[in-house]
Length: 43
Image 1 (cartoon, rainbow, N blue to C red):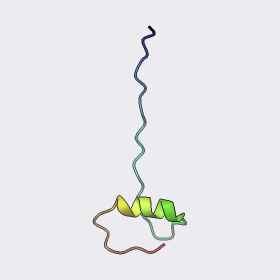
Image 2: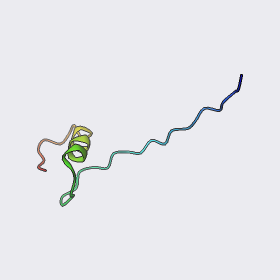
Image 3: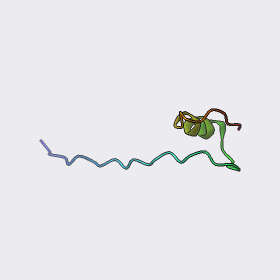
Image 4: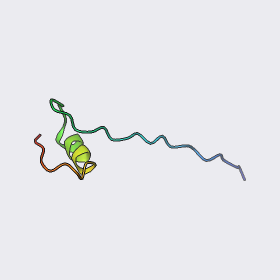
């Protein structure tokens, strides 16, 4: 049996939405969902 070391996962924080960002719909929704205090944003 081979013992393996646990691999560390790098956690990258989700950047906030910024005015002028050019994002795909998927990325926009990911960032929007990570900002529950945000009331309104447009893609």
